[in-house]
Length: 251
Image 1: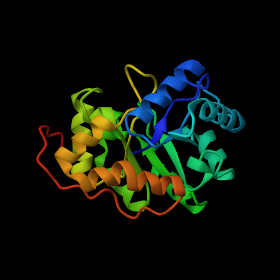
Image 2: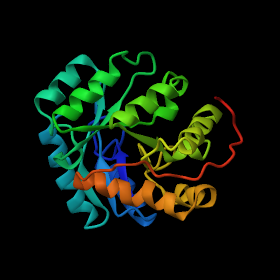
Image 3: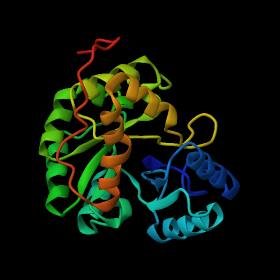
Image 4: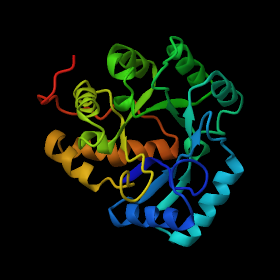
């Protein structure tokens, strides 16, 4: 499996606290079947994103961890006017593997009305945005029509695996299932922050997806589409999961 969203680098954000914590997280990911993991430290009002520091920490952590899982460069870019302007000026600075996709995060308190335009501008400079954990954002959960519009324009959606398991509450779980049934989801990732409460582990999620939506959907969400993101290749469609009846009804 390929995990495109994690906070495994020590001392850069609210993820791994130190080198030992980071190494334990990476080893846990590898032992649970993750072959590749993207380090995506925050770029927001609280944490400054330093590309050189990210590259150095990745090299140090990879050396300590060995060859598996492979660790890749990335960022979780908070949507602010300043961050978007910088991403438009330097398109690959925040991109996963320095290629064609950037993971973006919205505030829980404000989603710009101009988001469709932001998506279009990023696409114009060769960067395809991936919306991180929309199921956990209380505003985005109520704006499913906007999510559909953004996906139609070329945006991708990434769910958090633990949301599907109910660990972020019933609303996040129900929204996750709804987005899957509406064929809006391209990738499922861990958003791992530690080894206990938010571990970078996807095996339980893989089993759940296979049971609920089939092996093909699980493979697309956890392997094929994430691999395309790493390689900077096109993903034309979401996972195309079967539409199964949910235990929840929010829309």
